[in-house]
Amino acid sequence: MLESSLTDRRLITQFLNALRELPDVHADLHHFEAIGSIVDRGHDAQIDLQVAGKSFVLLTEAKKAVYPRDVREVIWRFREADQGRRRGQGEEPLSLLVAESISPGAKELLRNEHVGYYDSGGSMYLPAPGAYFYIDKPPPPSLARSVRSLFSGRRAQVLHAVLIQHRDWFSVKELSQRAMVSPATASQVLTELERFDWVVSRGQGPSKERQLREPAALLDAWAKQLASIRPPKVRRYYVPATKADTLLERVGEVFETHDAGYAISHEAAAQRYSPFLSSVSQVRARLLSGSNAEAAIEDLGARMVDEGANLAIVEARSPGDLLFRERVRGIWLASPVQVYLDLLGGGGRSKEMAEHLRKERIGF
Image 1 (tube, rainbow, N blue to C red):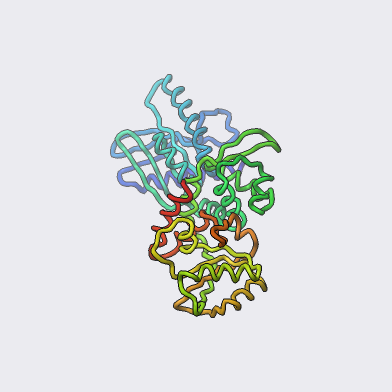
Image 2: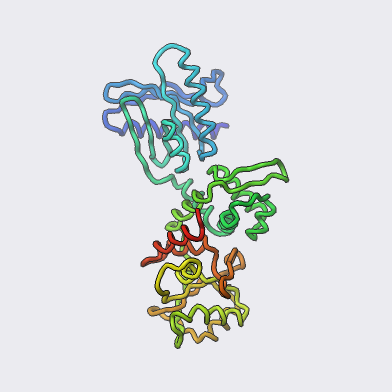
């Protein structure tokens, strides 16, 4: 409790300092409500604010982290407090949320409802009558790390599962089996998705089920995180005596012969899912590491090169890296979602191809 109170005071002090750095602004802390205070005024601190000669009263509430799921409760509480104050006397104060981190979706909801906010990264929204401030800065490191971890490793396998089967209802156990992760990991990811308000739920306890209701928002968020996620290592090869239009079939045939687990991605996979380019000169594949993979590479006669590669291999460390692959005309392709994300990280016309694939094959 004491730690929470100290955190709240630190956040409000930081907000005060940010206000004072603005031009023609004067801000003073009128009072701070410590935890356990006898008087519950319905807010954590009152700040007296002057902007270009105009006076305002800011009633602030401090929180550690705010996601879309939390915003509705905050707005409802602010509205209730506002109605109570309107029945009293004096000037009408403004309610404002101060937090260590506020997710982008939560900020958007707050702006839509004209509710002010400030986070420890320096972002600020203050829609006061006659004094409007809006400062948008990158999220604080704590939120950035939390979000980034959601889209990598085993957690990404869970996201992959809910996106591929977004129309299904699933329990934690079912989802963990689909995603090839532990129930604990599946449960942690679902908790995060609930915070972002991307899933709906039904039932209670062990029978509780969820369904992804915002697949487009989740996929958009994953796409935005690609720049901050370390790309997998790629080995580049040249396969001799093979034309571009037959390379894909030959690679698939050799990998099958050696029982090497694989999934074609990038342009070659997108072209097979939904043709967009006149031709594709390179095949990129995730290949499950091991002796079978090495034997297949040797059988292809492929040699490693720095330039002029027509085959690129991404090492798959576990079967989870090949989740939801689809067999299309005799070739294993990475899932459309995986292909879309891979294309976004490529060059040339790959981003155009990604958007074509999303529209024609993914559908959200």
